[in-house]
View 1 (cartoon, rainbow, N blue to C red):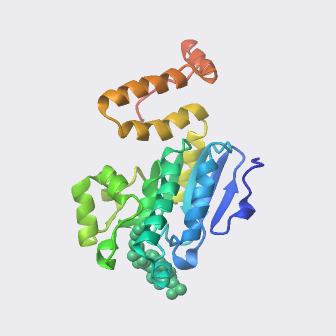
View 2: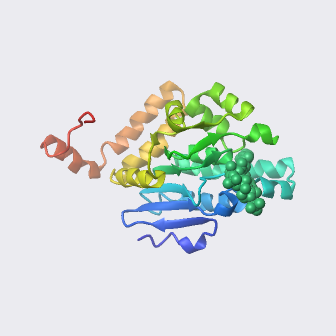
Amino acid sequence: MSDTINPQSYEKLAIQERDNGVFVVTLNRPSKRNALDAATIEELVSFFSNAHRNGVKAVVLAGEGDHFCAGLDLVEHWKEDRSPDEFMHVCLRWHEAFNKMEYGGVPIIAALKGAVVGGGLELASAAHIRVIDQTAYFALPEGQRGIFTGGGATIRVSDMIGKTRMIDMILMGRVYQGQEAVNLGLAQYITEGSSFDKALELADKAAQNLPLTNFAICSAISHLNNMSGMDAAYAEAVVAGVVNTQPAARARLEAFAKKTAARVRPNS
Ligand code: 1HE
């Protein structure tokens, strides 16, 4: 068990460690539909800044209650009556948290249900895999609230569904759900049952990969995508030089060479 992560030090997040190095991180403000106040963002920064160093093998990111996340805490924002400067810094903390997630090297599987809206969609889009159940729906209500996205939707949601669909979502308040959301790229998995159970199954599977391989998958791909093609190809070769020669991979390569490793087969 981790001796560096203290679940008791978190108030807005419920942190649960499983015996295989998978952690379940749950937004724990169900009475506020898990709206993201400043304190919750600080706890996300804290957990994800140190997750790789703390030996976390994979994370299931979930929400308590019927909704994954209602986005920015609009009541806190209204009460604080923030200045432009203050809100810029709020957004920079969101970016700090979400960048630590996307680039941190630890696989994060988001278990989505109910509202995944506004900043809730921005949070979910910083995960590497999104799983939805039949209740989950995606929206960017900012357009109707008189505000704008500030937690990376213009980058990550555009990346998932394309710029024009994102503009439509925020301009029109358009809602996507179900298989259509999967087809568009908002989620990669849909389940008839619990998205949490499916996310846990995927996290357990990801945790069986070598940590350095997962680090490359859940960090390098995002970095490489920010580069020019030439630079990305060069950097990919460097990453592969490190990852593909790791001593821990030798047993897996040997198993393939000696025909004891599973072969890749089509789905039956
Ligand atoms: C909240 C929030 C919130 C609920 N901030 N308190 N996000 C939105 O525009 C979504 C706003 N929320 C909703 O549309 C609905 O609340 C839900 C669809 C998510 C859920 O509906 P429902 O009927 O289950 O709950 P409710 O009765 O609307 O809310 C229950 C409580 O949660 C209530 O508090 P209470 O003290 O009166 O019981 C709500 O005030 C509270 N609540 N959502 C604060 N978002 C970096 S920029 C990011 C930009 C954004 O994210 S914009 C936000 C978009």
